[in-house]
Length: 291
Image (cartoon, rainbow, N blue to C red; front, side, top):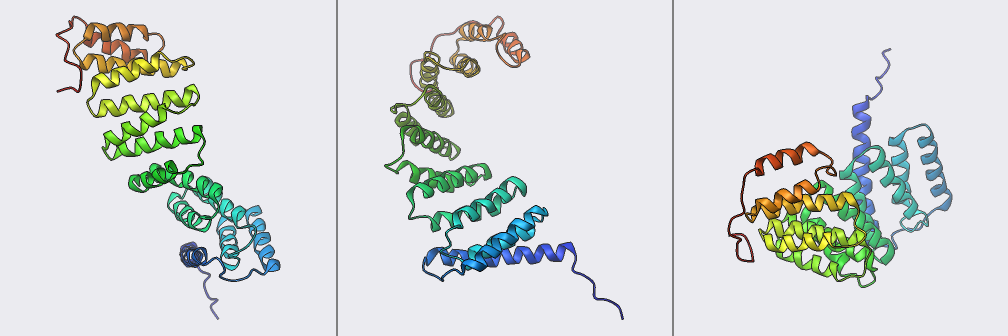
């Protein structure tokens, strides 16, 4: 008799994908109903041991299956936080599957809603992932929620404000971006974060064609103590563009010459200097936005 053919890799992959979808649906329900069912600790340990064995054999599919089964069968298991992070590490670092990682983080955000510290960490990771994937509305929503957290420290709050401002910029909402960055600059933080906020503010003002505002923000950045030289050089390059757009080519040329030997690509500076050669300053515009 002819032996039955073994299922191919495509069939196994589809089956595992279907299993993951079904398990995720159950997990979402379990997260919404905390007292769903009691764990069997012996079987739970078995699932985790099987996951470890699968990982030792580099079988990520089986390892993921056992970890998901642990989560499905143990809605109140004391190792859920660890298991979720193992799944995330496998999904992001090995599979580089951002879509599935985002699904996991959304479920985790609901499951750990009652733990402020863990919820904060999940929200930060999820917001960053949404930003990288182009889900700007969801990223902005998460950064807004984090910004409203009264327990954030100054450094963490400055980072959240900066990220929220960039989310607004991607949506062409320049006024709220500038307002958030003004709040960032009111915080007592280190020079790197402060410089980040000033840089972001100057970018917002440039995008909003507020050239005088952008110029002032960049000059404030250059006047700061403790700014690393690469950042200072980049700020001078940005300032050159702002000054040139205000019809002050002689000043723009002087700025470019000051970074000729410090800019990573000196050829770019040489090309810009050649373009400015022979140009003269014209009457300065009135303060305010470019017309």
